[in-house]
Image 1 (cartoon, rainbow, N blue to C red):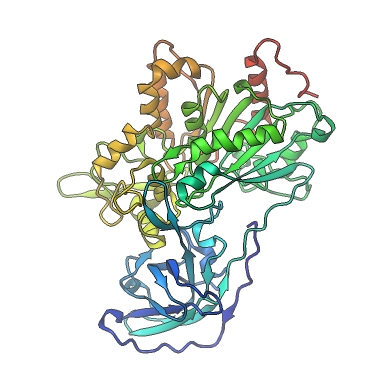
Image 2: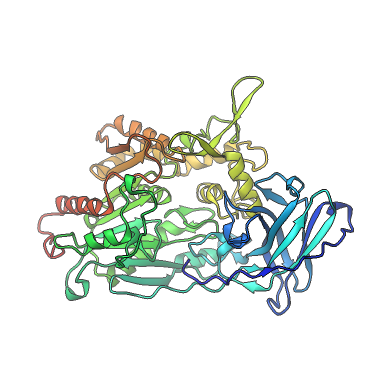
Length: 557
């Protein structure tokens, strides 16, 4: 993490569990308060109880699909010194209820995801995380948390444990500039006006060798989407570093030092790599587009952040020299930017993108299927819809399980997790100001009005491209490069096939695009080449598409 986390503080004394006093508190009950020394004002947010069988890491730090049991409730203006209760009524994951927790010894911790009030330009006043940092919401700065308690828990016994939220996550420590990495953070006027509160956009520039020795040279740019700001492509000059060496060598992923060696070598193309930070109040990424719930993030990138970066880092001010690239979330963002701004960007390298065709929203057809969780096999039987698999095909998580996690992490689309992230981008705003969900988190029932909104507002990228081909097609020829493992762990290859089929049917112009598939058993992390060879390929593309008279020599020193 880019900020320091407090060390684990574990209460080793046995905690006395007090008898519950209300009928609705039968079974496990956790009472949580905030000392006046921590907050003098009422607090709104999502209160989580994390219950782990492991002492380390702290339960709150392990929250996720494979982490501790969590139970969550909303807090609305909890005053200092008052008590909030988490009991059997709470939303829980992975078990359906606190009553399902096996009796035993656990390490338990309370944490609060803090919300701020936003008075948006669309007239809605809502409460959401307002830190806008690329972190899981339970790790955002300003969140409160308790000490860890070692408890004997038994849902069959009525009992109460008490926690105080005595600690707060420290502010993000901004990265310092180095010879290679330069960092910027600007206030977005466009987004701040929409949200009614200051909103900032950030970026990191990875500059080429001898950048400061060539003050008059302008460089082509690779906008690498949805990456860690402090180390694009795992970049690390330390020979002892092993970033990227995570069992991914078979997928052509380099270590940070290997990429550094290529980046600084003789004859390597001198690009500037830009990683933009565009976190929204609903997810780690705002997906580089304008949306009803997140606001005009696409406009803010194109009209504010990128012009600032082009001036500051001496970037070539022409579309042929602007390349977008990304994997997963970044893959969707890269395609969306190329489609929405076809005259602005000169090419897109799209790796295992989030669903780009909503007839394959992973394994869900949002237009035809009635339920996100269940696949009907007959009049009497259904199967659970998978959400994640191994490259051998073993299902590890289902749609229902991920929806249950999101329901525990936050209500009204505020979990900060994947489905809520998509729905905040693709969907309409509800009467209460929050995103309208595509499917019910409890039943899985799909709202077809929401599904149609996705399609009609251009977020199904295959359908968007098909409908606009007459004007888009001539601007896209030669620019689209797709890469996907044929056993993508999230079934994302299926929507790539759909996009390919659409392109194969195009006319005036006919442009089939470029599609590369990893076989056999290549998953979500697969790349056709390593990062260095990918950039060499991009450099050749820039040279080929540069207009007559363009300077393609000065950045090839």
